[in-house]
Image 1: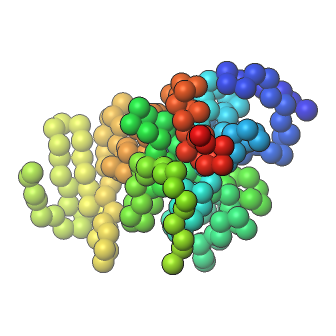
Image 2: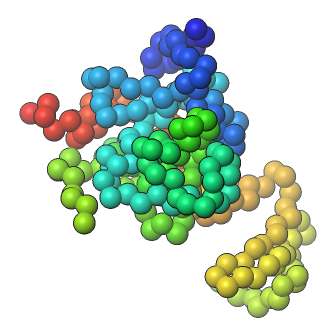
Length: 152
Length: 79
């Protein structure tokens, strides 16, 4: 099993077929294509996206449905094609895709980027950060600790 | 802000190096061709927002900030 030395987690063994592949990288990190998703019991429900090309690059993420249980995914045709999904319908979170919001931790409090969720095709582990300008979601959605609102 | 009317196929020049072509006009969106030096970053505004957000998110948070984040997410272990 390959092992990668990371800054945050030390040496992490990973399965090659667990690697998430971002064919176009992510905005700001266009040359970073390979990541693994790490989660730990003590930091649930966080999912850490650790780069396999840069030991220091690790995004903190949350499943979008943890941030907003009513989240409506809108992926454009180009991004669907990029991860090998049919453009005939929107993928279903949890069934077709894993959908993660990148969390930024600032002094003013943590925020999640719902404008551009990371969408992973569960069938082939290809991933894209899907910018959805017409979705109306914020790139800096405040994380609140109150019990999540009920979907209407 | 300078506002110009252009038809399909017409061009706008910005300085000597930047050329913007109206490639296609649809019902609710236009396709725009942009010719600019390679060194110049050309991205949609929302992609710039996401880029800046990613750069901020990639800066490792302090352990204190991280434990505060976890406290928000794990109500059962709070207090």
